[in-house]
Image (cartoon, rainbow, N blue to C red; front, side):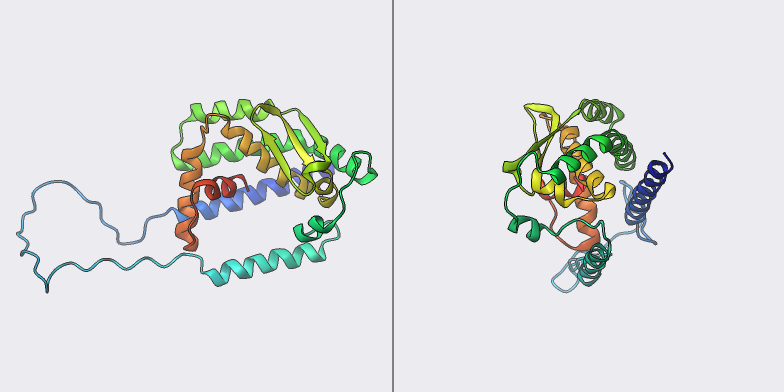
Length: 239
């Protein structure tokens, strides 16, 4: 019980830090003035070829590409040092397929089922926080939460290999490749993947969270200078 409590506390700290960074990124720049419609008290000279306003330079990203690469390197280095670190994707892809009754795959499926209730609550809380920050209606979040809570099954699938997936025609099930189940030895890694797939389920067949995905992608694009839209924005939010 104490280990589960410690894990829950650690994960909520991670969510809180991410939320704080997103809030800081959304603050307006100092010195920005509000604009009001109406007649100005002073006349402006007509724009000429010499006085025409120059286009504003593109703002510099808050996080440089070098910082992004540095952060990725640190994450990879930490994973390599961690005895329970997830197996790199390229190593998973090189493995032969594993049968459903492979002992490590069976253990991985059991871990996924054990952690599913915790992952569902974390996803719902994270969606509530993000929606509140982005002005998404509470009604949409409530509907998304119902879809998340309706997920009850974990199904191993050798054909998925190093992937996990959800099918909207069967919204109560998360499918895991058996190689992926073996490649996620830690609770944190498993919760990360469960949460990703649960967020896809939360979006539902009607794509009800696309506005949220768009806003998160736009904010991340401003921070990094990267182009993040459409499916990339959804995948980023799920992560």
